[in-house]
Length: 314
Length: 242
Image 1 (cartoon, rainbow over the protein chains, first blue to last red):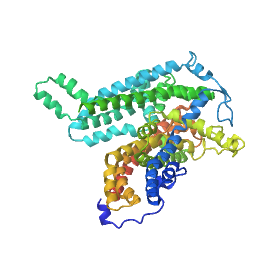
Image 2 (image 1 turned 180 degrees about the vertical axis):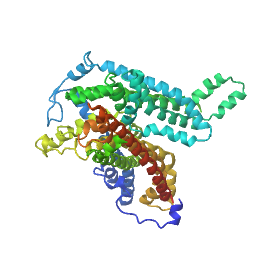
Image 3 (image 1 turned 60 degrees about the vertical axis):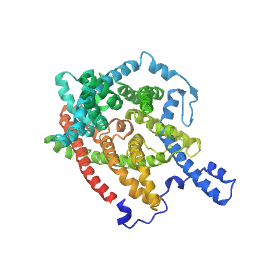
Image 4 (image 1 turned 135 degrees about the horizontal axis):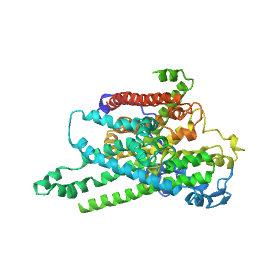
């Protein structure tokens, strides 16, 4: 705020100060409202319409651009013949889906391995993250900033560097090319996220309630189950979701440490993309995308309902 | 040390460093600018606000491999956009469509990153705007600040610290990018992570130390850039704020 007082204000350039209002190709609703009244109310209605519909039009453009890449995926996955310059497939078909979901493609095995690895990564990282997050959030200790920095490092280190570095050791330990090896290498990028998110959860939770419960005679287990759990569970669920998604999307680490023997969905998708059957690649991509999307939507629903009930209870 | 010496003398190494830096910096800058712009738009949406915000976050959980495949089908020379342009009669054959993928400037890789990271930056910026933005902006408006002044002196200083940490993560991701340039990038020069993998899986096992050296150097560059970038940005934020 001091800025407004101490500095001469910049002259306002015409361009960037009003991007939402500046470009409005179709302003139907605003002008429609304006047609009835006199000049002054018309202008007010026009500005009001602009404020109402302008951002929405921009948002629609934004969403179109963000969602557009999904369109060719869906179209191609249902196509039999789909040649340039046709926008829609000449012949529609379930061929690719039948192939991808059929017994020969290995999709189900890849789905299983992806889920097994991601669930294991989520579980282990939560085991680390719950105590670590709590300590980071509630105790001030010497070298805390250093710990936080070290925690951030795996987020910054490129996956391929982690994978190459660990691969040599994993070969020696017999972990290369195995599911446990892949779980371990996924833990490197996943755990820091889960720990940092968990620390945020504990920092925001009102842990003073624990002391109140203890004063009232609750046992440590009762406190943990009835007081702490409801406080942190929704936040920890989000942290767990992040861990799952980090593992779900891993490519470089699985490629190197799995050595081609652990075939998760990204492995399968990449092999398919290099293979050339566009319809199969598109269907495989959608099979890989759907579980992640469903999980996020379900989680948002559940947490949204939880928050609503909590608000209602208050 | 011999591996590092061989690497620095390698004709592909320096072009690879330049390309990786270009991909990471361009992706980060575009993602941050467009992400903030997207957040400002979404913050002002009145109609269908919940739906719009939900759809905006849809590609957050989508893995990069899928994003790369989608961009391939969208922007390849016989991709969806090329078909769209051809249907409008602007091009006659796929070859007339500009080569956006496998190109020298890694445009396809950058487009994939921007597509993936704009919602990431946007969601963070939107959360900050919802927490703090409105009241301060309203106060500034009452004091007679123009829209630009409100953005420059009120909204931006509030946004920057939070967006900065997001920008750091975006940069690190883009610098360590592997599967995206493998699918969408040119084969020469390759970005550093792809080069490291090539050397690591080379039939000539003597290339492995070079792969290790590449992995170490890539990591060092990311960490160094992030630490100095964070320090510089923090100072810049302080200046923006006063």
